[in-house]
Length: 423
Image 1 (spheres, rainbow, N blue to C red):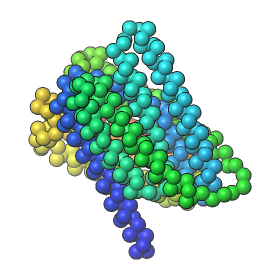
Image 2: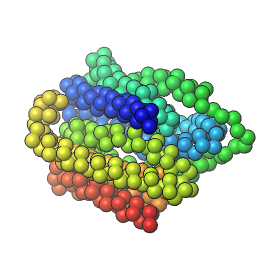
Image 3: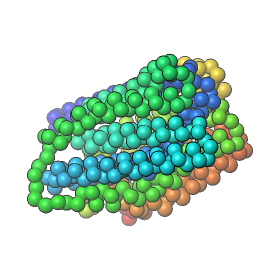
Image 4: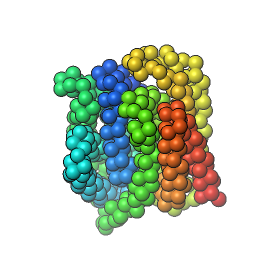
């Protein structure tokens, strides 16, 4: 028993360290980049990042979800070798798709006369491919509960992107394209380290068994629904910036991007810290989702995590209501400080959404990705409409309000869905 709790404590330490490094690196990045980039250039960078988000939400992200979910069944079957080979094959297909998208995007933008966006779009897609591969390797190492390796790579990635990005801006000039090049180069460095460490799993945990388990098919069947509704979640996640670009100015997009990085992003990471600890345990408990008693145990963990995330969100919301001006004075350049009053509400939106994600982990453990499609697509489209209406009527304030409404609707839909599937 003591050995078990000792392992939990050790794993928890590494997860906390990794998330602290990630959040602090991100905040340092905001401070550095807002010093070098004007709100307009920062807005261009934020728009470029929406392209990387598309790849993550529709291609590599769903694939990583399938890979992490099928790790535990592969271990139980003693078929890790075939599982890893299947994962490599699917990732290679995904990279091929991204290369094709890059070529057609560059051609399309050139034909449309948008030469300015060719470079940043191409580099954003490169950054997305590198970052997605990093994330998938993190998924495998998380499933294997190699917490120290995951923590150091996650934290290192955040700090390297901030420092290398700032270094490239000093070296090559303060433009959004240069910042994106710095991001891609930093991610490449982390990927090299990831590839080295993944060999430990490949070399030490493979058990030879007779017969192929069709892991590529299993991963694909789990992942494709996530990829489908990922298109709509991407629309919701990025429509805020594009709506502001349409109805306001690129300066406003830059101001909003800073607000998002200080509010929505950190609270999502904090709640994600608990999910990172529990997800491999959750999936191990659920196994191949054929045993109802194992599923019940996984469901209880998901509910505990969701309510804890909501409580933590409420506490941080109250603190930032009192100290939002001080937080902005410390963390961003002075010209970005006009929207500090919206920080508590952005945190509320991020925390409620993360609580809904915690409940969604119950459905993922049950391999019910298809059952999630209707609710996820409907709430995402609802969020897109809210973003455009909010930006049109009230600018950044309207976007933040729409974020709170969308997150609340998403949380409620996950509550209904989880309760419905557990009857």
